[in-house]
Amino acid sequence: MTQSSHKIVSQKELKSRVQAWQLAGDKVVFSNGCFDIVHLGHIDYLEKARALGDKLVVGLNSDSSVRILKGEDRPVNDSIARSRMLAALQFVDGVTVFEEETPEKLINFLLPDILVKGKDYSIENIVGAKTVIDNGGEVITIDLVDGYSTTGLIERLKIK
Image (cartoon, rainbow, N blue to C red):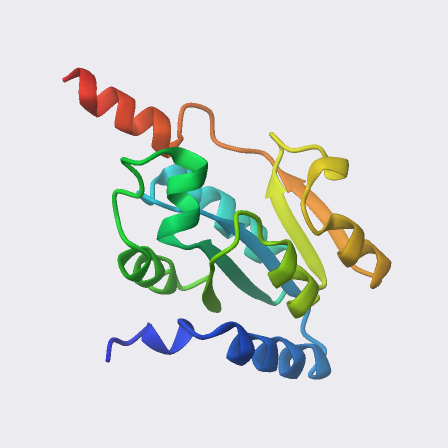
């Protein structure tokens, strides 16, 4: 067992943790993504997300959902490796994998206080936004670091 592996949990366990944190008065921030090859853009984004609340939980796309979203040659790293990379970040408090193409079911289950996505999304197009807002939460978009995307990084590597 690694030092950070206790952060990687089932959806049911994460729900218990989220509820306990909220009962203790902590604001829980939720974000999601593929996080296939963790890079500066991811680190910056997740640090900013965590700064919005007291706990940061991440919904991680399963390998099959990454293939649906990104193509048959993705993910580069499987969900076990991607979970461990995220859990190793000190500002991430919990990681869980979801099988669906979108995290809507997971967001509806966890009911975080704050839902975060990159500014490349408009709030009305963010999956789960209505649920979070209807439950008294906030939906916030965060500036992204220009020039950093996993797809772009993979394309640059293919050229060399």
